[in-house]
Image (cartoon, rainbow, N blue to C red; front, side, top):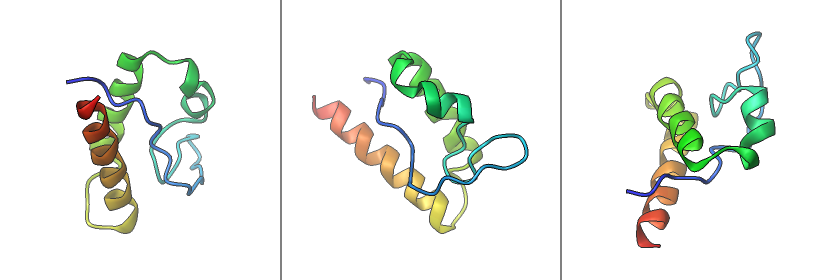
Length: 78
C-alpha cells in the first residue's frame, strides 16, 4: 500500500501546552515542515495521530479517520 501523504489537518488548529494540535495531533514543527517530509515520515505521523487523536466517538476523531480513509482510498487508486 502506498503511504497516505495528504495532510491530516481538519481545520481546527488549537495547540495545547505541549505544542500539539488538539484536533489533528501534529506538533507545530510537523505542521510547518509537512511539505518537506518524506512519504514514510508522513505515514509514521499519520499512524501515531490515528492512535492518539483518531480514536473515540467525538466529532474530531471521526473527522480525522474520515480524512485518512479518503486519502488512503485515493492513494490506492493511483
